[in-house]
Length: 271
Image (cartoon, rainbow, N blue to C red; front, top):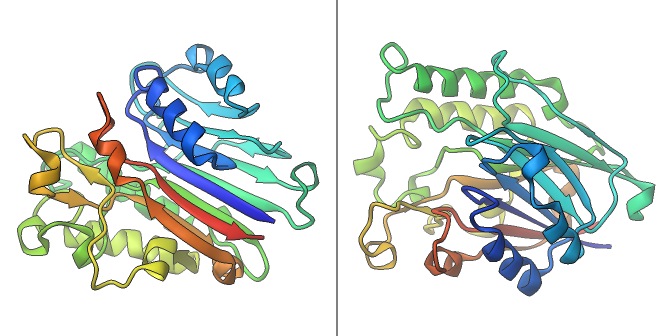
């Protein structure tokens, strides 16, 4: 069974629903995981997604900030929301696929929006950075994020950390910039290691090659300066390592009209 999944920080789903529709019509992933939807659940554009063939939707939204959603062509067996750091920000949602989706073995998908962390990489003076570090620590110890044996799990989202040297445009210049500081990189890689996760991007593309999924709005010409970061991730449990068939970053989406500063990231698995 071919299974395709895309993760995308859309930076307001209502503002950019036409861009989402353009992508879905062209790429047709089975599942789309969104972050930063900035939309309460009762205002989510469900009708538009259903018109596009995505009849199955789970939401964890809030007005104006954060928010995650999973839309799918395939039906879910169940869904769940977890709270991190005792904070009710809408930053996680998960779904389980099973017999209804034609899968004999269950598949669980986690969609995350990790806190950005503000501008100052010092938890003593920046509460947002302290929150981010605590969030990553809780992800590390979260038992449902520790798939073992034959368990089939996928973890995706805007994890807001570019953990490797070539996940940023300049390792040296970014070491003191939030998203690539040593402590953030260490903590995200600890989450990955504790759960025995496979980083699909780096499974398919060597660490020696640059990969970006985000380009700042501040750049006058994002393509010319190309000062990107890889903040958006797809991880799979070890049981799915041999199922990976493709990985793509739709960089062109950054040049669409009124784009998100993030672009869609897609993987294809043979289940």
